[in-house]
Image (cartoon, helix red, strand yellow):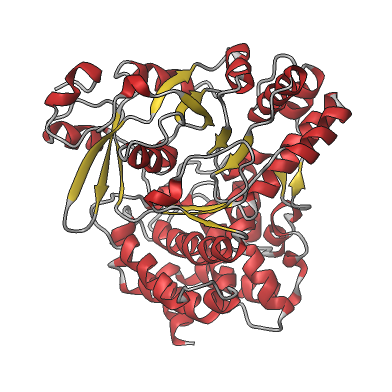
Length: 485
């Protein structure tokens, strides 16, 4: 049965228990990908099912060209879609109805008008780790990026998320409407701080006074988000049809979900604490735990598995070498670098990460975990290396992880299979990775990724030794050597 408002009551799966006609917009969201639709939107849907939060419905805002197709598909089913939560034992489908509109890309005036509306209390973002124009060498916003420079020169017709946010805030200030809260939901350390800098510096290019007003008046809470949510393929669309729902945009995800958020919403917020969101004064401990143990763990799994032609993440967890490598690096190097987290056992948290990665229902791919290493490594791996070096600790396992990433970027697996481009900077990475086969220092000389860490003699020696071993002996033999060491 086709998924739409008219058919809701007849669908053979759980559906919204609230009147969607009673929903009004309160959140403008940029980045309507699977993660947002399985995370923030699910929490809102749960709250709406209690009869609360009906004035915080989501209006999507398209920015990228690909958003046009996504918008067309979702509009064709009244902005409804199915989320299928999957444990190893069961699949639980539910229709989510928290989104009521999706503004097409290429129409900045419509997005700015929605941002300027007094009804909008929150502007939220899931634009991926690479979407924040961060200069890896400095860790700060790159205001010289051509897209940002273009928005600075033409602020009335912005093309970036940050230009649109600036224009929306400018319109609110002009009409005396209090600013909305900007809520980042991406996997970036101190994501609210990062987003604040991006918005303020974008504003500064065209209106320094507005930039100071934003810095003084707009809230940018930090948050930690977590849910494994693979891309949707024909496989998932076929599975949802087998469940009786004709949905062209379903989302399949794990049954685990977590959101820890700083309670800094002067314009108002939905009462999400009633459906499991944890509001805290400082999210930093949870943020570091997740980024280093989970996201860092994904990188530790990803590259040896990719080089050994393993396709799915759960298959990697069934490989004795990969699982042992993950456990050793996490227990010896990663977990000791994570400060205490209130009411949390870090080793129990890691055990849950293992369980989640081993879930065969998710169909998460190694290629997804390998994606965008040039943006992810500086956030998820290299800070841990830097902290351990500063503390005088060894980094053998993390140096091997970095060498595995380099070897992966050389573009072939151990079997000789071609690795298709899997990073926005793939051409450059591929060139340097091939050079590093004879000169490992060339890889670490990418200061935009490694900063000063690549110059550390201890790390450089271990990295070069492991990279040479990977080229000479292959991934499996090198992992065995590390595990026996």
